[in-house]
Length: 234
Image 1 (cartoon, rainbow, N blue to C red):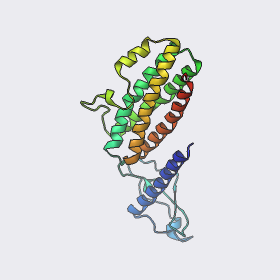
Image 2: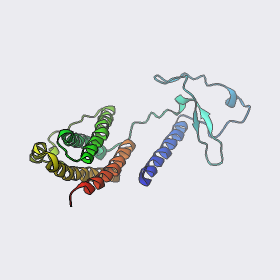
Image 3: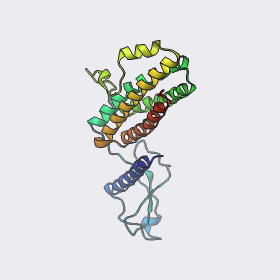
Image 4: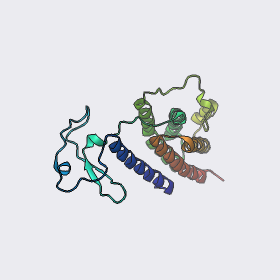
């Protein structure tokens, strides 16, 4: 895990704790731990669980304020009902990354019976294994928020790193060393575009899931770019 990705995940954890404490406060949670042996400390919660919440769910540990101990609260009391926070660039990034990934999968699929270099085929396999499931993650993000995947009137060919139709036809027609050279150059450019898109959304996006996804794209595809450059003939 990279240092930046680790910091991002740590930040996500901090935000999750803050949301938990905030949810308790909004629901009239305690201002501190109940005194041992008091009715508040010993009496079980009799409030019915909200619809859709498992009443048998284990309690949640809620950190106390500075100088105070953590307390246990029923899971339904710390449920986060706030809607997910995202902005237009988060949505744009997710919508654009789907066709961007789809072209990468198309290019990688051609390597199976066209590439001569085993390391090129291995790289293509890695791309298929990672980006295929990622498309599912992106589509699920849109579905959860009631958003469509398409953008009316947008030409995906203008996206950073997207390869033109003629270049894709040349790649499909190539074999052996010619294919390897074309594939490495085209996929490097394609990855560079994805890294730039990810960097943009990390600057001004709001959604934590998108932030983690974009961080992963920027990190992992940068590593693959370095590998492809090493494989290119001098």
